[in-house]
Image (cartoon, rainbow, N blue to C red; front, top):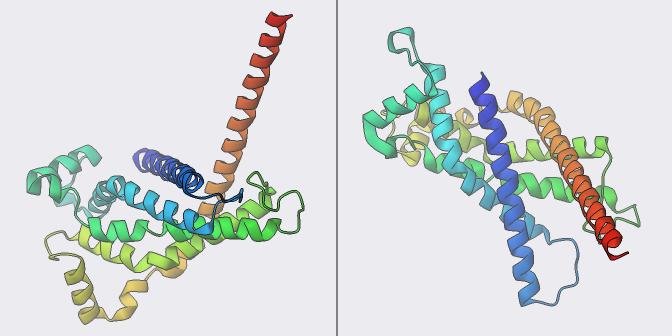
Length: 247
């Protein structure tokens, strides 16, 4: 249980880190190519940065989830000792490519980080339009309940946008030898079970998505505020030292 928890924390850190870096890159590029005076980044930047972060993250989440699915589906006759043992077994079976089974549907699913961050940012901006100090300002702040609402809604939209890809990914990773690839899995699943198979389990996923993503954004917002506060304190202390030396 500890391994998945650490893995989720690491993936979230990678997602938010990649998203922040891509946003900064787009802002710098926009400044160098135009004279725009907008302080808030365009929503298209949010969408592209989220999708880019998803693509980057998929290279980590694909083998992680392949191992998770294999461990969850194992029987006593083919018991695997743990994640490392599972990776070794997968590598021995088909090399490094085999450890990335389901890469395409994983990447398609992770593109949901585009709608994810876009929805969060859009809701945040809508809820701050009534605050004169927050309009056209890159430092707007929201209360805890508003962050929870925006984060939870973002999670629901994200899952609804690419849920079918997650279903296909799970099917391929649970039976790597059964399907030739992404398209083959879609065709055979549709022929055998109909279109509803691609949305099976969506309701409980949505019910889980709201609280888990609300907590994610609340924790992220709180952590960023704490880090910014610490940086400001350090800068003030350095200024005070410099003033004391000058005196």
